[in-house]
Length: 498
Picture 1 (cartoon, rainbow, N blue to C red):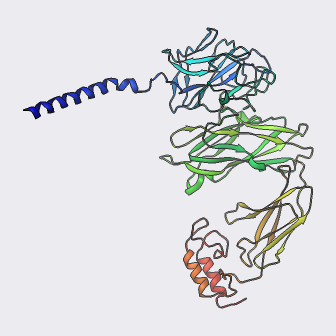
Picture 2: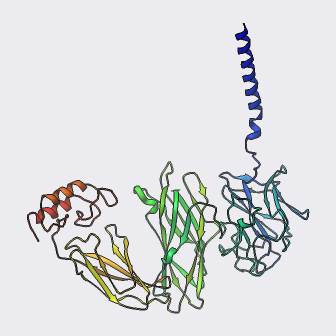
Picture 3: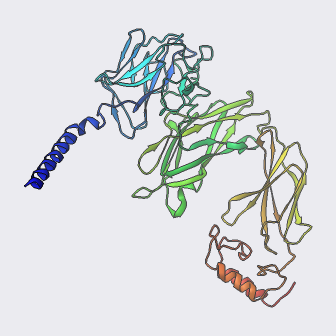
């Protein structure tokens, strides 16, 4: 009987604990009206714009993967001013721009027009939801603004949206724009409606012409748009803004990054409404269920015609509508535009490669490339690979280079030599080279085509470039695959010695 009583008491306590846990469960779930940190004050244009210092604006950023209704939300400052958002929705990973006047920004959508009065000396800003819950706080001491500039009209940008807005070190003055214009057409030194120019909150980086990969050819300039260390990239869309008085769009060429594993893609590029100055580029893997790509690579290449060189440089930047997405939806990323150098001849001041020649190197299985020295301070040597792409095989300051990398006898290789000066690249030169010293099929370089060469080929047979068993010396026709055609080369020379 005593044991039965103990069992009954334990069962009763268990039921009570479950009821208490169930009663409190809704209290722990996220409020449908937003909770702290889900929406942040992301950018503050407290100095207005170069067109009008009164054209102030505030940008909110949703760091969640769901849309949030902002109706009834408001921002309080330390002077008892309340900026009420009567209605509006901020999309997942998206932005919401509150401006003082409807024409404060001429080419950026303003989501709410609210009369603002931001003090140049600094304000505290507290974002609250419709229920009065505090969502985000900026500059709670109401001291001087953490960043921004009243002279250049640079905005105050949040560096990492996931860190506190009350940390001075989490804010910086905008270093570039995203193509946004003021009421009279001034360039906004800030990024309303898009990723901040000082963003450093994690995720991959998308950049234009990184590490000096800008190539000039006459009055034309080309550069890649690349992505670093991305996970599950499924789609992207970019607005690319440039000065139509300086550049004319020529072409956008997709690279193979999203096409890996034979997946088809949908790549398009077009000028917005057919007018120069705003280029729209989009792409996605045509794969369902969605599966993205990982790693680092080139998304596409851009080519422009240089119309004038009156300025030292011109900016090409990512616009507010730019995004990248994984298989689930939009993901945060750092977008880095390009300050494109200009010169009077439109080539970045780098002379072309001249008198380019290729010959057999001093040692067997090598090809020497030489050219006339110019005003370049560096030369990049690239070799055309089996897939048609050029691979960087060396960089030299002298005017010659010898390639020793897996040279197959009697096979012609194409090389490209690109001159560089002060980080800018000039017009490349092309040349063909061959080494005739040796036997095709002698993949162990023993000067005899025999059974060992058959064995080496067999161990790599069926492999492709990039596979661990792929043997470049057995790929005697340089097509990126070890197959029957390479076996034929062994058969043609079997039993011969060099």
